[in-house]
Length: 514
Image 1: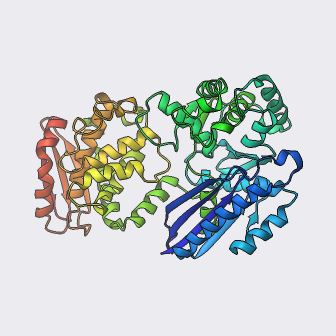
Image 2: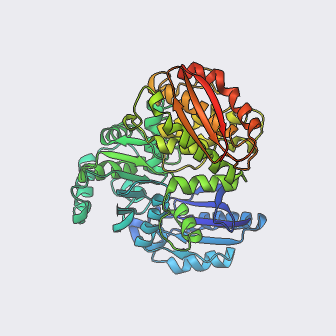
Image 3: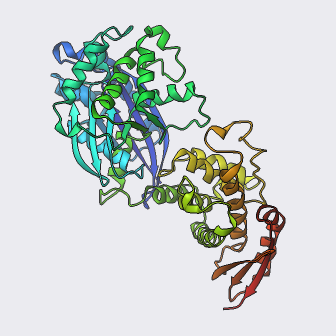
């Protein structure tokens, strides 16, 4: 196991993530640090970094470097963005950082910053197209993505901090018309920004995540997950209008808004609001990943191309990090998929009419059904539920993620009851239903997954294939193998009562030699 540190010196804050990574390129973020330094504060006057801000930056970077030394980091990648990029005293700042900390800072060009934002997004979303927006303190990065590749990109020389200073937005917003006019003028310089309403805006950075947090709190959203959260243009405008009417002290009390961002949040949310207004984009999707994760992917992925399937990649990453039996997981997944689709006629709805991508849901549930054993074998189905919900799994909507977690947690004799856990008490009912197709999918898929795991009980892959025959009063599982599977079949029969109550038919097995 090796350690990597990524330091990001921005106009508003300095951040660092620590990453454990392996030779197989699997990785996990083990720590994150952030200090609000406001390095770019006051730069609009003369383009110089102020001495008190430099001192704060040096203090922060020294602390970060000391931590890297203490935990024996193997590689440090330190980058600086807009404030340092635009500073007239850039070289003096870099020299002072090196002299005090030994850190060699790479100053990213605007397009490089946009590129690493893109790398963070493209490897954590299964979206083919979108406009990526990263609102920093001193710049806004925009990347037009088509077919998962960069079509256009730009770094605009203004951000949350500079817009706040330009229009004096530290207190209530009395210059909304001026802000809109200014931003529309700036956006109109880019011809390719016009008429993008058929693609989503993918929002990167803490400012945009705060917009989502405010909206989630307002609506009592039951999942504390931001990545892949969706808002429409009206929602964003509502948040902007709300904060615009409040003083800085009042903004600090808004649920979901970080008090450290309260002073620059009017300018920040205005940037997002008026970009959506200008482009006609109706949908904002929140990204929890950005430039720092983009630098991690750039470091680890040798061919530099986007990962082929972000869900497969993130599942494999999780399997590696939890040291799970990948061969067993793969066999259970294949058995589960095979049995599941053979039983489609026993569901009350057609799979292709379900509003979500069933194949991705059941694959996630099957491959990660044992992920909870890393915490404790006993009740590991419960642990699997919250690991799946809280691990970095990409390529699933919140609904799909929650459905996969419930199915995976239901694989032990149907123990993870919808009524025992959360749907009533935590009220995930704003995302999935306690009845109807959602409940049916969870319960029936859970029992199928239970049977699939039983058929690989000895972890040796002794089952060649399973054929399912649906009769009037029973469902027959014809299990083909050249081995003695009496133990596996007996274990699978433990699901018989639950199976019959869900499918309304008796569960039978027949072992056939091949």
